Image (cartoon, rainbow, N blue to C red):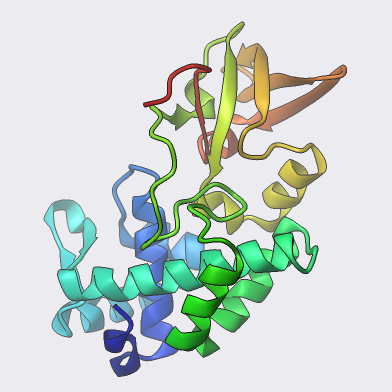
Length: 230
């Protein structure tokens, strides 16, 4: 699974990993989303997309929607696996918070060798997800649920946080806000108010603690109904 990463630059690996991450939200991946997610100019992203398409790493479909080729997906999964394993190690073993772990993992993932990657997985007990709940490629799959974006939760219902998407992880302020308010995988939230006119959703986490989020931010957090596991 690791061999093909030797043939690509760190920049191409970053692009492929970003497309992989954005695809996990269930929404179409287009150049504009990719540029925003990576904080790179639109012209630079467009140039990179066409270069990767010529290299056989990505496919450009109808409406300029991007998808990974088999070769591109293999590399993206390697990078996602390394990144998410490193995040797990940085939080669980070294005690870093989410935000710092995400940034440090991005710095370290390109230097991780297959040997160290495998040893790290063993050391961590072969975890199925990163600290944010995103599945780690190559590991046992987490329990199956029927997740949906928090932004779609109905007022008065109780939901359980499944994962904080990689798209949300790229938003440092949002990640800090979620960490501070303990919005983490497994956390139960009761939806106390949905206010489309204000663009917000408010939830209670118990102990009189409430958290308000904008609907765009809440769309990056996936939840499920208690008992809805497979």
